[in-house]
Amino acid sequence: TSFALSLIHQIAQRQTGNILIFSPRLRRHELTARLLEGGMGAPLAALLDGSLPKDSLQPTLQSLQASIHTETLTSPTLENILHRVARMPKLQLLVIDGIECICRPVDYETKDICFTDQPESFENSLRCLKGIATSMNIPVLCTHHLHRSLENRQNKRPKLTDLKRKQLPESMADQVFF
Image (cartoon, rainbow, N blue to C red; front, side):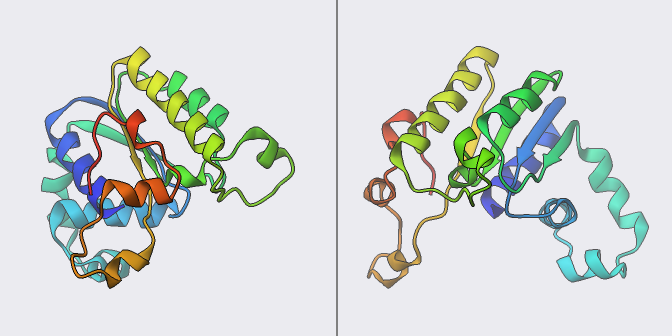
C-alpha cells in the first residue's frame, strides 16, 4: 500500500486527469492521511491530531495536478469497479489496493467474506482489469500482500515463485514490482 501511494503521489504531481483508488482495507480518512504523509513527509500523528500548521498543507495540495478519488468498499466486485471506471472522466490511473479483496458476484450476493484464494477468481479479476487497461489505454496497478514467511529466508527479497504459491498468474502482468 505504501509503495502504491508513493507512486500515486508522484503521478498526481506530473499528470492531469483523475486517479481512482479502490482500497478495501483502509477507510477514506486513513487513505487520505497516508497520501498526505507520503507527499509531505510530515508525521502521520501530526496530520491526525491537527498539530500540523494548515499553511504546510497548501504547497503539497497545489502541487497535485491530478484529482485523486478513493473508493473504500469493503467487498468490491468487478461490476463495482467497472461501473465506477465507466463514470470517471479523464481517468489516468486505476489502483486496486488488494486484488485478493475483489469479490465474485456470487460471493457478494451471499454476503460471504470475500478474501478468497481461489485461482479462477484471481485470474478472472486480472483478465478483467487487463481489459480495462487495454481498452482505456491506462495503467492499472494492483497490489497483493505476500505471506510473512518470506521474512524467515536468508535473502528476504520476494521472488516470482512467491506469487505462484499464492496462485496468482504472474504471466498476466506486464510488470511485477516487489
